[in-house]
Length: 233
Image 1 (cartoon, helix red, strand yellow):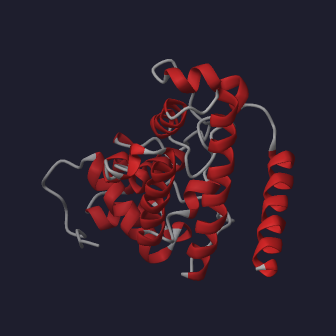
Image 2 (cartoon, rainbow, N blue to C red):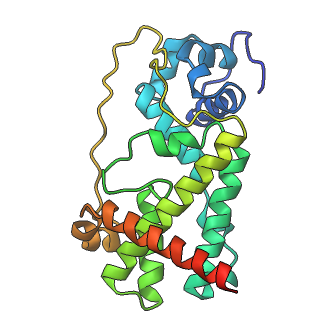
Image 3 (cartoon, rainbow, N blue to C red):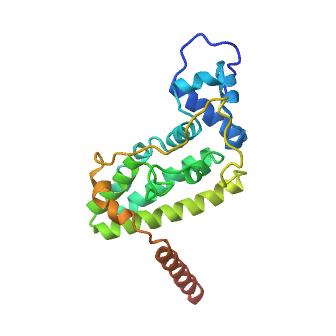
């Protein structure tokens, strides 16, 4: 991480703030991030950061966005011609980011998404829109598309959190809040507007349904079936 402890002369940018925050988390974990430490690494007072982020929730949300940024651009066009190839390519792209930032990736799970029906790691509205529109474009019904989104997200999150934990990441939320540098900052989740994401907007009622128990049972049955098949061969 660049050392910018000397006083700055250039204007601070949001990109620098997020880049340095991610670098601190990569080295020390999210519990090692404070606004004062982040400000010191940028050569500014901690309070100067509030020109770019509104506080803890906003900063960590920006870090999550940075970790997941550019996923669609990483998908090889040849692989996404089928829904199977699309799911394979997307999973590998997300895994690459998780293993590149194992101490930051758990924030994808522990930091609240903008809506309770958005599931990590596929929690960005543009990413969810792309997923749902892609699988429905390959012939999935709306019910099948929502089930695929929920099951796929659960699989990725569980497996990747285990991998990150093996690399030394803490997979639970911080016990102590990030130091806000003395600022009185509200921590409320922001409101979201989904109208620009037509597939997400159309499927919001289905996405909001609580189906985790049924998904658990289906996943468990599939696991048992696969084990039975492997030992019978």
